[in-house]
Length: 137
Image 1 (cartoon, rainbow, N blue to C red):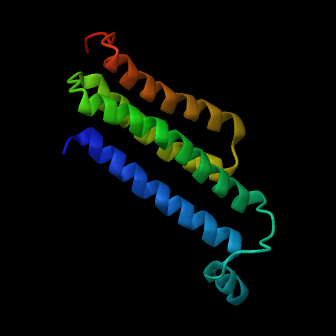
Image 2 (cartoon, helix red, strand yellow):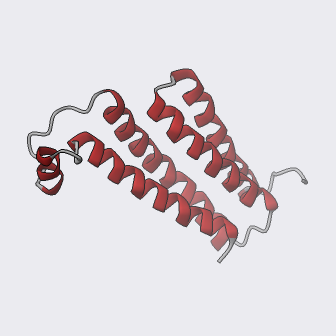
């Protein structure tokens, strides 16, 4: 397995953990009533606000971006793209997303957008390598 594919697997695991965390925070699973809601069918759950809402939105945004990232990595891998920009872009995406999650959950708006742009830059490097247009490292 390549390092780049391992990053995809790690990002999937992180996204899954974030989705679970968001669900537990929203249902307040640390309380008896919240635990019942977490194990139930979640009908009638209150709207997620503040920290719970930010955590849910961070998880959803991660999932949306993970789909695009995974597609790019799979195209590069299956297509045999040997350009080091693929792994470099994947590493940039990985670390930017880790920082993004923390910033989003903390509620820092403008920095969140800047860090998101860094993760998009990482995906851009992968696409650039796929298109054969990446400059030499």
